[in-house]
Length: 143
Image (cartoon, rainbow, N blue to C red; front, top):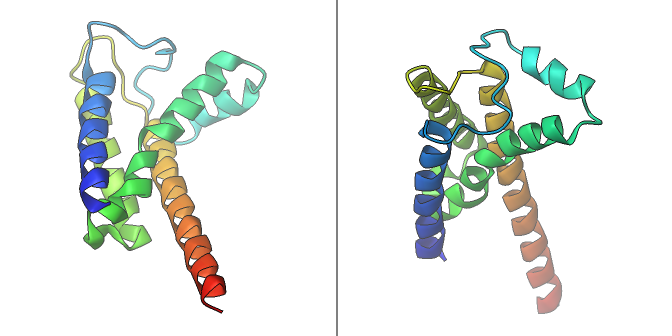
């Protein structure tokens, strides 16, 4: 299981870097440029909840680092603690956003960092709940 999780994370990391750092094909929705004000873009998301365009952007940012929280602790036992996942997600997302300052047709947004970290934490919560359910079902089957 650890090897599979590691392989999936490696493929995810490469895909994430290509998706977020390539400039040849700008992503649809690149409309906020250089936002350093926390929650500015998130307010736009909330104000446009009826727009699939903005929902897709929010879900994309939420899902970007979700695999890190979901598979990271399986692949790397040192990531078992929630704060380590949060710190790693913060570092990865910040590095991506800072690098996007140097890539044509890309921009950095502090709200992307916030939502990316939230996505990693959501993955961690899903993994934790799955583990609790697994342990509970195993305990009941032993009785």
